[in-house]
Length: 96
Image (cartoon, rainbow, N blue to C red; front, side, top):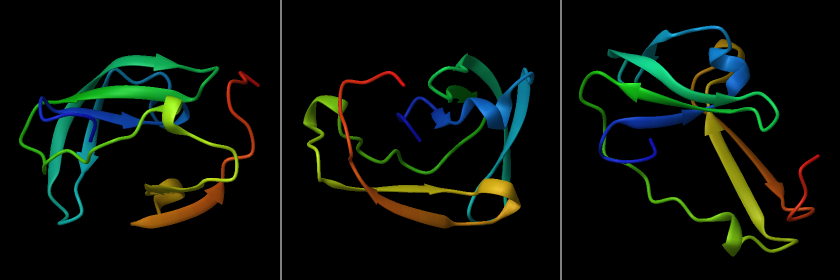
């Protein structure tokens, strides 16, 4: 979750073409939402939830990233639940 106002960040390819979505929470409950913004080139989208969500997680900024820094991504790709992927920042300030 991006903020306590109910904005959730996801990938563009997850919500491409959708206006309304359902968010499935870790406890199995569901909350409705609508796509408020999406960018195909950066593969990012923002959803506004229409119900209560868990507290937001503090996010860093891209200005804080350093080459070689370890990063993680948490999500549920391809119908898998609770996945975690880790990696290393290989570059900063690039668009492709």
